[in-house]
Length: 548
Image (cartoon, rainbow, N blue to C red):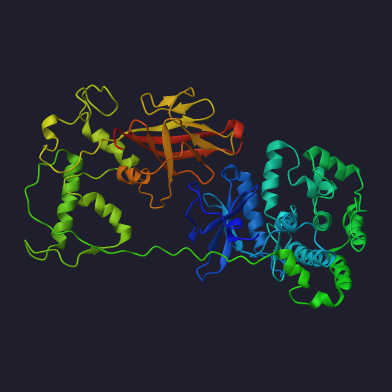
């Protein structure tokens, strides 16, 4: 952990910039439950935001367990825990926020420097045991105590992810019928899917302490089934452990749960052997060496400022006759806006300002001679009102290549300075799974894999994939739907032919650009990825031809 870049990874294209009002600064990592990000409270205190994986979020049993465990975790208050400060089990996706601990995990520290000296291991065991006392006092069993869930703060260890893993483990057990967890740090009763209690965490404490002292897992590496067999049927070889640590770790690792050491006993035993260093505040000097150099935490992401723009100067000039109902409605809106701003006829516009949140909607109506570009919901009604009747040679166009259903003499005259806006073509309820695809050409729905847009969950999670198109996820909580102009802008530098769905939920939008120049908007209506072999998507599609 020698530089900030080893701790804080920059956000990627499929990371959300904001989660429930928390502006994300960097990635902290990922695990079995989801991705973890750095953010800050309103007062500037750093927090860790964990966003649950969509595969788990799709499972209602998981959500119920997650909600229960979050409520229990709120009650935990301990000097050696990372306090849970905020969460939403009903969010899309679910998430939680804990205080950020500036320090490496035990796993990272051991990987960097090797085994810890005995005083540091004693300090570690005492702190983790105190943390488990606070966690158990709130009625929670951690279930997944391991080196990566123990952070090394300046004043001692911090235990994270307490209790929350129960929701994920229980969900996985229901789905697969087998025990789920980190094999090297399971207790025997956990390895055989038996009853998990507070003493299960004591066994994991002994394994974690042995890892810190040896620099490796006590029960070795290898396939999960092999490691679990050793835990259940074999006594570990403790001869490689420092002699001062063997009696206590052996008590923690007793096969019979009733013979394991109590947490109060662990704390007292460690304090006696630390002697005067037990009350040294930040622990022995060796603890600071174990943690490694300090890392500067990135500053909070600033909130975008509200930029004010003066209204354009209005100059009276002849306007072409509006071509259809959409343009006539847009013209009436522009006229109303201008009329409300003019003090006297022919006067200059002075003092009319608007703020950023209103700029997008006003921009659509202000551009002279250009009807507003509609999202998917509006496009269907617009197409219906136009009453397309000409035979189509390409979706959305008549035989002559002009807009279907729009009389030639009703379109804006060539003298108009307004660019032509492609008419959107929409279709809904399209299905994507491992055997189907979506095409830019009709029929949009294909029941083979030869279409332009495919979906799979084989390589590093579920994703959209295409050989002919590039994707970009739209992070927009306005609910109005992305427009053609916005997709054009977002896709200007897009180059990704595969897009992870890790941060996508129902309602998520994707701008897509085909190599032919067509632009599409995909709106995710249903996402089911809890069981990858049966995963599917349902989505709505809107296409603008030759729009790039």
